[in-house]
Image (tube, rainbow, N blue to C red):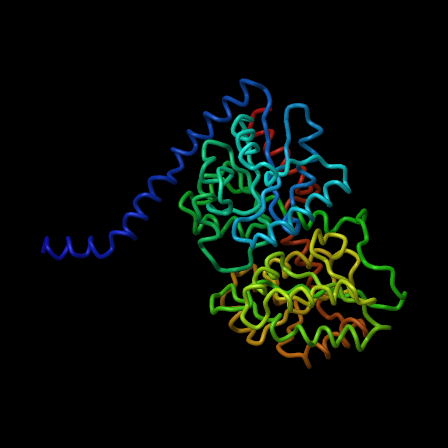
Length: 428
């Protein structure tokens, strides 16, 4: 009997070890104590040093919070540019250049951590940061001491860089989520999933609404669309980066739509303006893809940049969404985010059943408010119907969904909610 038990323990040792360590490491009392000590130190000095990391411009969501804290003398606020370690070196350099151009255009101060990195990391160590806002909730996103793993003595705050629509427990139960001080999730669905999947039962989750959607639904946005003929419809095409593999994250529409979209924009010059809005990681994946590579990928991106009734959009997309007429995409987050502007959207998937099988209940509700294109012909017919003929039968349903689900705190926008939540947490 004992030999059998010993054999079972030996066979399952790695999984059991992970479970035991996780169960102890994420115990609520322990990290409550860690946070209490840190908050007490902040209260004693009566100010907090806050750092916002930015790694890809398309994932930047913290600008309103940054500006709000910047105007409060109790906070010293910094923006650090640090590209993701998973990107190719060329993609990292491109992202850094785009981010710097964006901040310079808005006269926002930043620190480029790729310029003399050893010196800058020492500066970060000497700063004594109190609160860190990361762009993604993972250990190992940076190949240096800026990574969350090395800063567990700080107070982590996090707003998802996209609205989670997948049924993926790990997105709620990474070490980062369990030890964070404040997690600001967009809807009650996401709170319920955190309570279901996280070791800490989602005790650090607050339903705030979505920061990006707050910008997207604003009427005071810069219009990034090219000056165009007045009768042209403005359509966004936003393909995801997961173009190969068989995981639930796989979204391969780019591979069967890329030539069709070129023909569409070329053959309807007087009717449509198309903005190619690829996922920030798509270029890196295409560089590695056996049928694409760098030259073909760069030529394809250049086509969208140069064509008269098309444009390449790789940065912020708030204004792009707001001033558009429709969206064609296969991105999980965009299936929720675009609903805020209450415009028709087409979700592209060869097998929509497979896509739905990997979604959580929130994601399935979002997709139910989309028109589905499983082939080029269906996309053609849908564009004719919902864009050119204005036959948008889902508009009323989208309106109810926005009011009932997507705007959780009536009268309080997301930035205000997060700002006052942090103040209460610090006792300021």
